[in-house]
Image (tube, rainbow, N blue to C red; front, side, top):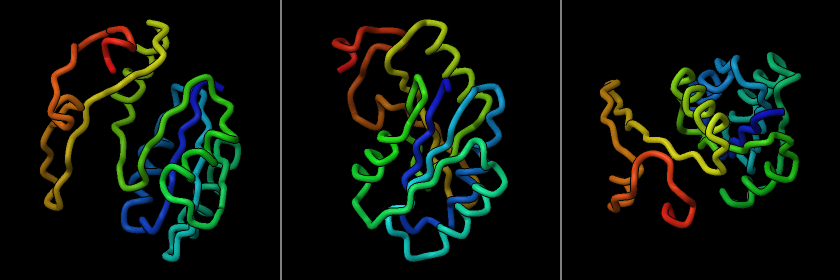
Length: 151
């Protein structure tokens, strides 16, 4: 297993399908998708069940009482089998081709941590690019760097 994708879910029925659709479009990486229903009270579990039925070999589902984001992520880590682990919030989605490129770069360069940029999507499908540096209001070196320099 190359990659464990951990997705904490809590009352995100409005966004969950787009999130999962984007993740399951990745075909080039040997992956497992770990979905943690962290006590949702909406129809998130019904959506999760559909993906589990459609992708039973690629999917693990954990249902638990609400433990918060960190608790849900930790539950996913407890069952993750991938050499690499990623967290994707259930109200976000990825661009599969870009994600594969970033993952392959990390693997080919034998990196321990990979950080990429992101875009905000507004209700009228207008996107704006933001980088992780901008979000944190700090400039960090771009490209490959040591963990000490990064942090």
